[in-house]
Image (cartoon, rainbow, N blue to C red; front, top):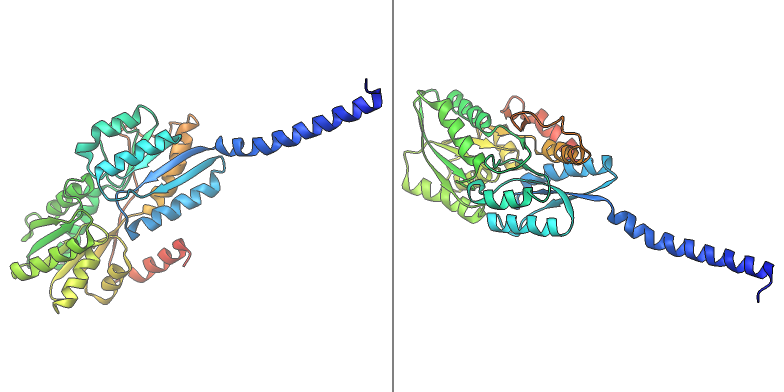
Length: 324
């Protein structure tokens, strides 16, 4: 038998060893207890860098959560849906997504919504069981783009539109808003060419229109990368400034073209706020606070027209937001 002093010492040593072992094994477990929130975009594009910066800011304010910013391998509904399935299987607690194709994704969205709270941004899926949409009013953004066209083209024009996903709600709503604003103003949106976020096709669509439709004197780029591709094509054809361009979003090429007068203007959104507010919204919802969900389930972040008069101030603020 061990003497009392030796037994006490041994017990103390075992207790210390157990406590140390528990601490080492408890640390990973504690990390795993963090709830995971995911923000899924519709395709790989520089446009989403601002949203990613917003998610990064939210992460600093939500230490109990692990925030993820995810791109699908390609901009297709099937790959988006597969990514959501993978995230849920990995223990993600809530998801916010920009839907590539809301019509064909309803069943997939509803399947995810049965497992975790699902929110939409940028491109809504209103017929699904998502909790809420947080993003721009794409219809109002389209109206603003149409107002740029009306101001720049008082004598009327024939316009060609270019967009990524023709079936996405954000595309359809922007196009509808544009048409509403130019109705009766002698401005016609002749057609809209889709490219499925294929940048080479986005450029070739513009080249094809320049070659086949010489009567087109106005172009509208409805997705962030469309205006830069329009710029490239017009520059190559020596038609910069000869065809009026109305843009969306804040690509550096777009802002430069607005500044030098090559573009009439651009309608910018606030993707930084989508990322920041979206993560905070999901965290609050998981904690039982549903007060931020309006009755119509739409949380609208305003859009703004940028033209030659305010482009410098906007660009400076943009650089500050991105820390450049």
